[in-house]
Length: 212
Image (cartoon, rainbow, N blue to C red; front, side):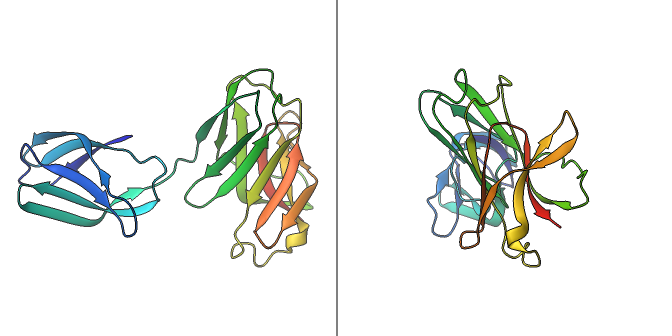
């Protein structure tokens, strides 16, 4: 739930607010409070809502005002997921421009924990034959545990962004912070679905990289 303030004129007690978008269900404001005649505060439940621009509608009695494309929904670059160690877990990470899937088998960690996937500052490559792309993720957890089984990571790439690259040369690499180096992982490129998949027994920073 996101708390927002809407500014305009003529707001009065009893008004309501909502967000609309073509082919999407209306998001109705809750806990709406008229702060002044020019400002209202309210909550919108944005969970699993389509990203992009939405129209803002405020209605008071018979008067309805609309601000086209007045609200933008975006996804956070850092997202946290609960992992139950007794079952297989599949984590889907989405941002406005990127997505990845992490599969964690049961009993991979010593206890239940929270896994965080975020967009990191990309470490430079120590290898002249390895080019690091902007498709980069940092995978960690709140207990600093490392997996006892292989986890499977699938990273998506843009066919437009990678059009000039030799796709068969793409691999996922893991960054080793202790030795400050990138380690290439055995990877499978799926050119039909624009994905690269690997397994790893370590959580760290991962990136789509190109062997050059």
